[in-house]
Image (tube, rainbow, N blue to C red; front, top):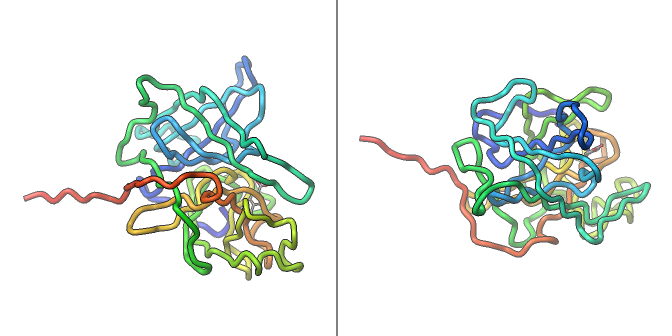
Length: 249
Ligand code: 4AZ
């Protein structure tokens, strides 16, 4: 995340670190992408994060990649399902979404805690200009490595016609994507944030409106982040994940 701040414990409990290692190798798992927990055994990520012939695991409930958080849950990926119309060109990535099925028993994979919760799925479009949140362990500058600590930033939903203007992204932009960020630059997602959440608050619930997908570098003027349009791919469901405050005394 370019221009972000550290995420406090439990503030983005649906954030996943998708980690891979070459199949059957003794190498360690390394962070490659973000993801979003949407059900106990289901994680959404970007299609371009799925590389074949790799062992994959997800880490949930973690803030720091280097240290082992006592709150973290590490779960193997059983299956990765890439969108059937996923397509990558030199200019853009289309239908950039994949579903990860996690290993578990009796439909329980991730255990819900204060630090691990599901995000809600979107049930339609949200207004241009709305402020939403992005998060991830990706680069903090174009030429820098990823962040050890999970970072977040606020971004604005950008009008689709505006973002398809020639000085921004032009006609490569389609309905499977939308732009968010700040046209003046400075706050953006970046390499290593891919697949992670763009959530917007709706009726006090956090809805995964987008997934970090692509962009022309990071944080540049008139080059906002491009996100996979979640509402294009899911059926709406009723969902709640708001903080419930237990009152004592
Ligand atoms: C990347 O390389 C990448 N500024 C991800 C997000 C953005 C740019 C690049 C958006 O994975």
